[in-house]
Image (cartoon, rainbow, N blue to C red; front, side, top):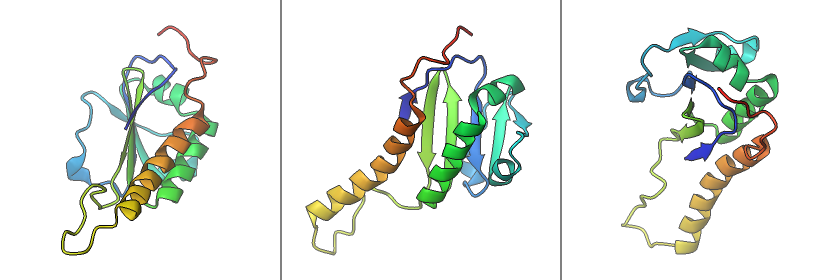
Length: 140
């Protein structure tokens, strides 16, 4: 899922949970590993950015708490990429949300509820971040 992110920054920032599959990780060129002040966050995630200041600017203590909460609620590997003033969210729960066993009877209502539940976790996270708030937007 991709969302508008109302902070301007010059470099791309990646936040990748340590259990995210490495071979599916195209790292952005010139990004270097960044250590943040939150020790628990550093243990749960790898952070990469070309400009270290951008990682600190985007990943405020409040924002890091929200990311940790999302990760725990999803109980699945996640990857967040901040690129071009957008937030890209990837969740690797090992399931194809749109693929169901055709050998079993299809329950459309159950399928719909499963898809809505998966999407709602991420949209609730984004809504909680108040991404439409221009309070912190500044020119890069």
